Length: 139
Image 1 (cartoon, rainbow, N blue to C red):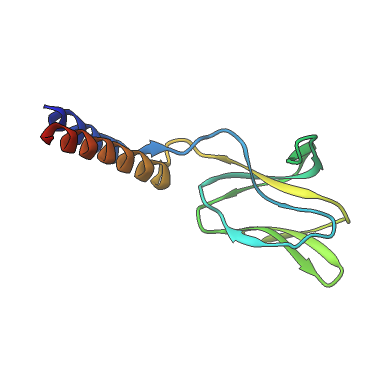
Image 2: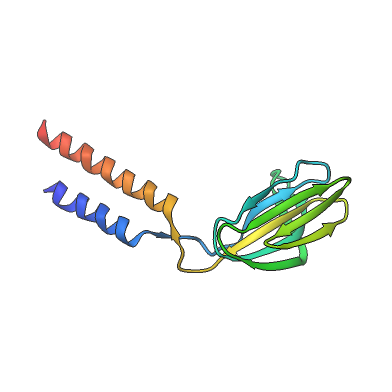
């Protein structure tokens, strides 16, 4: 009986998937003297560049209004690059020189995007629970 419920549930989750959160989150950051890195955008959405400050818990937070905003598609480059003694923000084909300081890119994903990692975790969890129930019902 339990397999009749668990496996169709896992199939439904796999077919419908999880959606990417549209809540703003930090994508990349750089401190005044820290290493800079450019990575592919993980989602389609708006990437906003901010000056950053460190919160009491050690995490960075955006400060003030965005210095720049770019609409990027998954796979386009975004992050920070050091050019000699200078620092630059990178978003797609654009590059913006930055003054000495700490910065972060915040992303707000477009709605309706599939979250492959989240869906995989849920499907594997449901399958593991279903397998455990099936094995327990045998004994």
